[in-house]
Length: 154
Image (cartoon, rainbow, N blue to C red):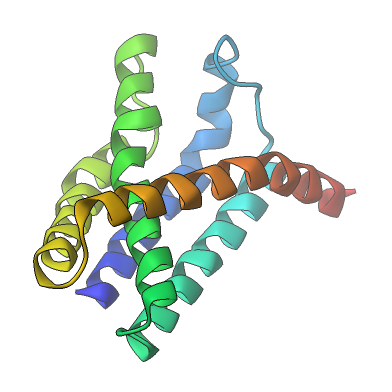
C-alpha cells in the first residue's frame, strides 16, 4: 500500500506542478502568486521528502521514529485534500489544482493506511501529533523552498 500511496502522491504533485502556478494568479487574496520555477522546485523537494519518509518506513517499519514521520506525512497529505485544495475550490469558485487527485487518490489511500496503522500498533493521539509536527515543518519550509526555487532560475 505504501508504493500505491507514493503513486497517488506523485500524480497529485504532478497535477499541482503543471497547473497551480497559473492558478495562483487568481488566488492572490489568500496567497501570493508563485512562479513555475518557485513552485516546481518546492514540489520536487517535497515529493523527494515523501519518498524518503516512505522508504525509511518500509525499511524500518517497527521503528517508532519511522512510524511517527510516516504517519505524520500521510495525515498531512489527507488533510491537504480539504485544506487548502477543497477549501480553495469552494471559496474561490474555481477549481484548485490537486483537488481531484486529492479526493480520488490521496484521501482514500491515506485514510486506509492511517486506519490500519491506528488499528495495528499506533494510537490516534500519536498520529495527530505526528501530523501536526510534519505539517508545521513542511509549511515552514515552503517559503524557503519558493525562495530557493526562484533563485535557481536566475
